[in-house]
Every structure is written in C-alpha cells, then in structure tokens.
Image (tube, one colour):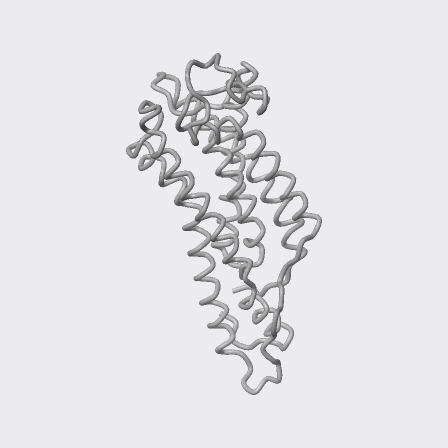
Length: 263
C-alpha cells in the first residue's frame, strides 16, 4: 500500500471522506429494499399465490444484496482512506476541508435521472400490483385508462425485480467510480454491468409479454428440460456484453476521468 501522499492526494482523499453522497445512495437503496420486502408481504391477503411473507423472504437476497453491497463498500473505502491518511506525510500544511463536494450534478447525472424516470414509468403495473391497486378480474377498468397499462396479477413480478436491479445499479454507478482503485473495484464494476444487463432482460421480458403480448427471449426459472441449457447460453451472452460495457464504458471512459490513488 502507498504510505506517502502528496498534498493534492491528501486534499482529494479528505474531500472524499467528507462527501455525504455514499450515505444518500445507501439510504435510497435501503428504502428500496424495505419497500420491496414489505410491499410483497402486505398484499398476501389479496393474492396469496404471488405474495406473502414466504415469497418476500425468498426474494429478499436479491433485494438485500445491493444496499448491503453499497454499505460494505462505503465502510471499507473509508477505512482504506483513513489508513492511507494515517501514513501520509507528517506535518503537512493541508487543511481539513469544509463543505467539500466530491461530485455535483453533471451530464451523466441527467442521463441517470432520465433512466430512473423511464424505468419507474415502465414499472407502474408492477408497482400497482405490489400496492394492491389492481383487483381481479383482469378486465377491470379501475385506473387502467389513467395509467395507460393493462392490469396484472397482484404480488411479485420478475419485471419488478429487474427494475429494482436497474435502479440499484444506476444509483451505485454514481459512487462506485469514486472508490479507491483495486482489483475488488474492477470486479465489482464488471458485476454491476452484468447485473444491469440481467435486470434489463427481466424488465423487457415481463413488460412486453404482459403489456404488448410480445415474447422477448429471456429465460427465467422454469421446469423445462431445456432450461439449464438455455440459461447457460444466456449467461454466456450476458457475460460477453457485460465485458464490452466494462471495457469501453469503464476502462476507456470512466477511469480516464478519475484520479484516485491505486492500492
């Protein structure tokens, strides 16, 4: 580990420590987690087939992973930064910065906001299903004309799982590039690319099939004899696409625009 830092590096790391961006992202993800868990539990009396405590617990590892990932990353990154600063040049004249912001809204953030609004709009049917708004039979016109969507069964939908994954990766992408460079950071960024593609597949499959009666070939859990073979192909395709996004999006763009210390 690097033990001597320049004043510019010390300023950068101290500014990183004073940023509250990590806390904001973590809080948003924990809110998403609790909504995802308790909303599917709450509508169990309306649709016990697709909702309830058992289903909420079965789905909870997916919903819990992202806030846990961000929280662990935030804590470990702060520990590493404090460790680096502890071994910095003694007697440096670098002051502790006040009210420093590591990152403000930029063009990337406006893209994030647009994508979040778009995914929330697409998710209206699944959000309504988790809140118990649409009641059977399916030909009910309650709020259908207002939301411009076909009603769906209450409870869990794999489209909502996909939306959750996409929202989580979009939020995490705001902070992930600020962390200190390491092999773990590179692996996690590739993993986020993989999760984003997987979530997009779930959203497209569920939305097009339920709202437009168009089948998008993305395989979710099935008892079919061909499921594992098709899943293996899907894993290969998503891994390849994720590698392309990781290489050109991260290594050739993001990493060139950040200067945090390597360890």
